[in-house]
Structure formats: C-alpha cells, structure tokens
Amino acid sequence: MTAATAIHDTARVVLESVLPGTPAKVHVSVPNYAYRLEFVLDGDAGALGATVGKRLLGTVRGNAQRMWHADAGGCFIEPVWGAPRIVQGRVLAVDRDANAVLLDLVIPVWLTLEATQDANAFKTGDMLNCYCESGMRFTPKG
Image 1 (spheres, rainbow, N blue to C red):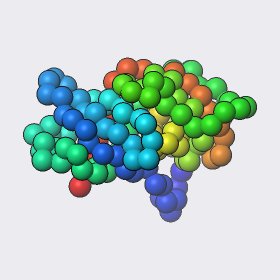
Image 2 (image 1 turned 90 degrees about the horizontal axis):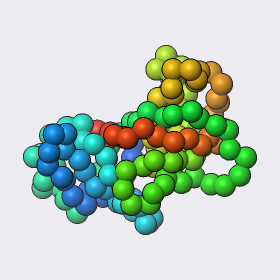
Image 3 (image 1 turned 120 degrees about the vertical axis):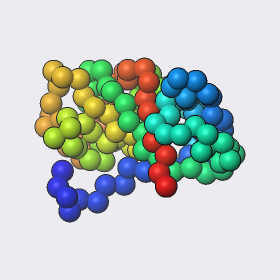
C-alpha cells in the first residue's frame, strides 16, 4: 500500500444503541440491509449517546483466524445479528506493513491476519473467507 493510494475504509452505519461497560459496545445497523452488528467501542461511549438512531461513520477492525480464498458466494457477515464470527468479502486494499487486508463485507472492515499468514498472498479483488476472533472494534470518525 502506498501513501498515494486512496483507501475508502469508512463504514456508514446507523447507531442503534450504546451498551455501557468496560469496554463499551455498540449495536449498529447497516442501511438497506438486515444487519445489526455488535462491536467493541474504541472511543467515548458518553459522546455517542446523542447520536442513537442517526447515521454514524467509523472504521471497523478485527483479527482474522486463518484466511482462505473463496470460489463461490458473495460478501457477507455471519451472524446477521450480533458480533461477527464468519465473514466473506472482496479485498479492497492490502496493508503489507500491518499484515492486514481491507475487505468489502457489506461494510469495509480491516482484518489483521494471523502470524503464520502473509498479506502478500492476497491482492485487490480476491474473494476471501475466514472466522474472526471475538471483539471486533468500531472507531467513530469525526
């Protein structure tokens, strides 16, 4: 990935609720889809209280378990409601320095590969499938 490459990694979601706790969690829905996803919040839960029910921009990051090339199917997040466990999507960008890929999973998500896998094995346009570790994170923008 070069500095001149434009990366569109902003997830556009609707904030459904903020769950207080340590760490705080957010439930978000994806406009025009049935998804209602749960993420660990990277940010101030109190600052988001006024935005419940409104559109929210942010970055989603998680850790992948072993990633595989997929030959069939489309982009998805499973389960449709709750914390993401299984995902499949197209590679939008590869960050070789961070050993991560940006996948289009209905929303863009950065996934860091496990230590035994190298991001150099993947390129833009590849369809990939993997299980995700618990605790995928959402960082609000702005």
